[in-house]
Length: 126
Image (cartoon, rainbow, N blue to C red; front, side, top):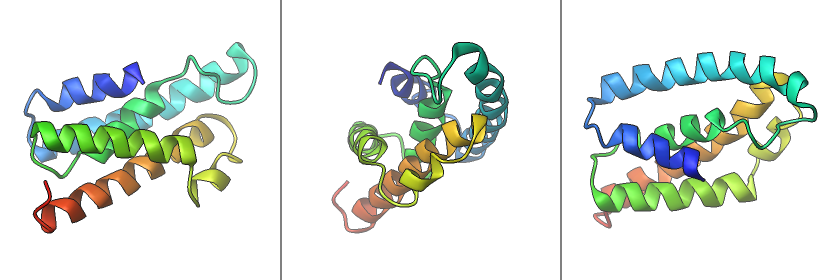
């Protein structure tokens, strides 16, 4: 959970959506590689000490929304809910091996959260 807060802190820097998207790409690419390298050394699949996936998922959850306290709070809660529940296809994406398997389920959770944040904004709820 603390790693998702790192993503919130980065988002609070008020970077433009383009810079946030570039940052997300870097986090995903470097994070996938790093997780792929770290997983066998740490033992087991998706060790809990690898948290870059949560940073990427949370960045995605708020990527296209304005930086307001409500968006941050709702995006964070929705991301955590989807990360825990792992709705399809996040649940089956965990079958992927290595860094890709570690990252993809959190990116799906972040995408679901982003879609609901954008819907809530469109409906005037945020």
